[in-house]
Image (cartoon, rainbow, N blue to C red; front, side, top):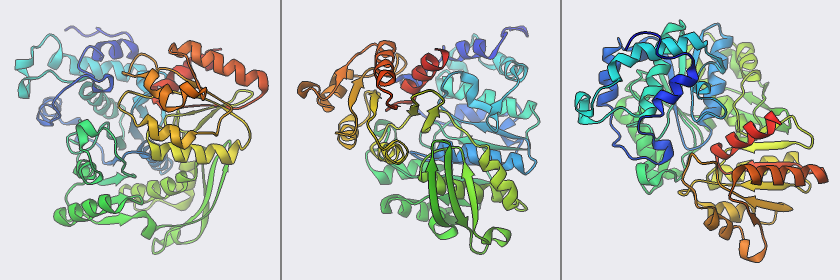
Length: 444
């Protein structure tokens, strides 16, 4: 195809959306052979910059955003690859959270296009067409090369071992807390899911892990031993003191014994809200030092102060406030509610939606009795959902909630009710619901 096929990153998005998309519930076989082959044909852009690879069930996006900002503060032009996006596809491929130039994204897709456009499945390794996520990941790798990145932080999409991102020769890996999630893909136990996440650990390279369930930690210890990879547990490497939360972020006192200038107790702050962000800040500092051994505490503190990520307890600047949190597992919902209770302890309203494969019954039990009104809806049209079943878990039959299946109608009705009475509104259960809320409420 001649150069000039795409006028913008939105055109690129429309094109890659034509391929199989697991995020929409479409099926594919996870494997890396096709990804490795395409990378080789593109000159292995995934090896052009040292990187940190991040996996986990919750917190991986926050740690990725923080680590990229720390490396940027150290003077390294740093690519950041995350998912999902909230408002625009290009959010996934950024310079430490700052927008990537449109021309670079378009040029990256133009470089990739001859390898995929108009080709049949039989022309690819494994006999299947590449997926939406594989193509997006390849565009990201090429964009980081074209942008002259000197480092990158790469967040996995699903799992780790067979995730499309796991072609990177990372210098450090990070694994955040493991939960039962995506069990149809990753396995039905913590140990099985931990095995998939542990697939990102590279031989001889350090792996930094957050506090984990015993079953998960056993897998990580064994994997690191097999691969000769140093295992650094955050609870042993960092001493976290006083944690303070506010609408504008999280502040914590952290010291790192045996880490030179980082040994002294120092206050670090991030605009990301939640007590768990204290541990995430420590993980990000530890991982960033693996790429930048001469990193200073001042650089780390400055980078953390600039780290942001949409829909991770994001407080929209509205009156009364609206909080967007993509929490979609029981453990992440508990953390969300803990932060919400500390910052907005009074009456509040809730809009909730989740994909069909999420544990809505347990999340409903966690949220039970906390909110004046609960509105159940769909998480937009992108993900499969069963709002009637979710509403049943929240007590629809007993009058415990209302069900408005149209997402826009539900959000507007709940927002107007909360605004009328001056109450904060929490929108949670799905990143896709948060995306719809952000587009609707910020535009208004």
